[in-house]
Length: 284
View 1 (cartoon, rainbow, N blue to C red):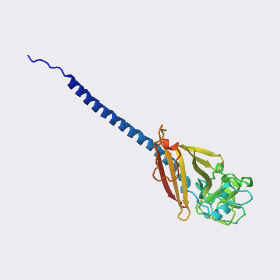
View 2 (cartoon, one colour):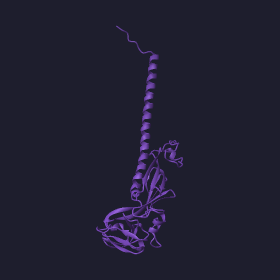
View 3 (cartoon, rainbow, N blue to C red):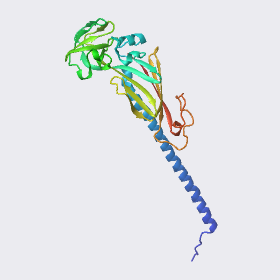
């Protein structure tokens, strides 16, 4: 009958050492894996924040300048019928950048088409009829509202905005312009709207200039925004510095991310950062 031999102390120590090495390696690999997952999740959050901002801006960008002059003097004069005029009459055009803020003046198309052809002399109100009922709940009329953008309309084929002097009935308006304007038959009525956009204190803000509601934070985690408009080429470029969701105890973004040229604050360096960039050609 064979005798059973027990493990020696050396064998036990060797086995324990192997288990420790293998176990330690497995723990390190597992930690590295989860660290990578957390990092990718953080970066994905930052990317999504940038995409949310682009999505919010896109509608206004696609319709910026529709039915309006695009040169500075023409644009400013178009909204000056009297001594009172909208805030945007001091802007440089339907697309402009001022003090780090993006300014967009755009048109929201309606389903109401002009019933005929109309010539509108500068400073003279002309009755314009439409083929469908007007969205009167979105239009303010009367001389006392000349400074309110909800009193301004334009047409897709026109280059001149018009002030709504009077609502005649559900399908007719008295329209006035600062300079001669022409309205083509079947041309669609558009409502003039405007926004200002900027980043501050870890939020992206939008101010709806149309209603004068003040700036509203719309996307969290946007540490900075840079806007550039090339008026000669008609190209608007937006670059955003976006944070991940988690604040780390140590600095995890020592270097500027690609595409971002401005300085990064010490607080921002405690977050995973990406720079998101998008460019649009202004078509109107």
